[in-house]
View 1: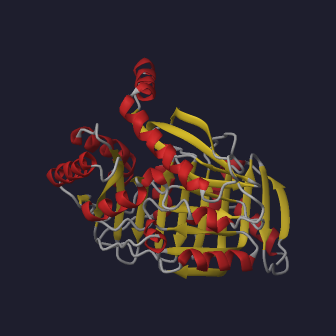
View 2 (view 1 turned 120 degrees about the vertical axis):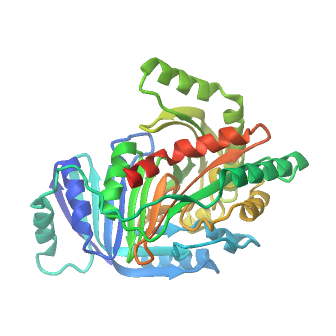
Length: 432
């Protein structure tokens, strides 16, 4: 189905804020903001898709086959998410832990209205346009008046609780270390949930503040009916552009300092930390193996290894792995054979996921899953859902989870402290 295109020049920063406010009238919204981060693989500064024309919603059973059929039949832009629990369709695994958020396992929609921002260049793409709808919407968005005064939270009794006590966390990390010493795994990402019950938040205000204090390259606001994802993710899971596929796992985190000299030292210490480098390299090997399932022979390459990048809240160690695929490789097969991403599982992958399921207390659901899009030509781009607040408005349930990679060299106390560093932005947004 052909889309109507409309091009305008806008003030990017002001327009995308107005656009996100305007989008709240719809039940289906995906907004992705690069926050002015640019790299070799950047495509857009911001994208927003709203108003489902068609959609697919399913549990994990045969989910990738259903997505493959949907993506092939639509042959258009589709936006949506993959929960971590799709692992249960690719392997003989299950998810039995507590789930208070209740996101469906997979959801994608074909938007009636799509906005693509690159600098000050705006492209609007509409399906099934009525009369002068595209011009009228542009006028409505442009004329919106944003409330510039300091954000006020509509929070009621937001009291953050821990699903796992500190002692339980130490106990379970030590169990994971026992698995490592026995040779069951080399590394596993171990996560814990922080949550609030009977609590309300204003999703768009909460997202704006989280995005403002973090400014990551893969920030995402997702709304599907009464469920919200408010994400300040710094990590790309996977991207396909023409014949090239890239994955950019993050492993290795250090706090920032307001003192420039100390901050530079913290970044340098992270880059040279043997434990952090070991974590990252193990996951790079896993990603290389995952990409090889669909790659042309001999095309898997490590483009960048253990490079430290600095964000507002933390320093992160990031690697980039690439591959080449043939024109007849289905895009969904590339995702199916690499999901869940190695940075959120461990090595060996299946053993790590089995142990994670036993030792964690919360069903991960959308956390450590992915949000992204497919283009009409089959190219795609997906993030990793970390540093994120999840919200079920009907149940008045708020959740955020954090984790770290456990290896033979892990100190349970240091891993716990790393979790608190990662949780800092979400807690600050919800409690201040």
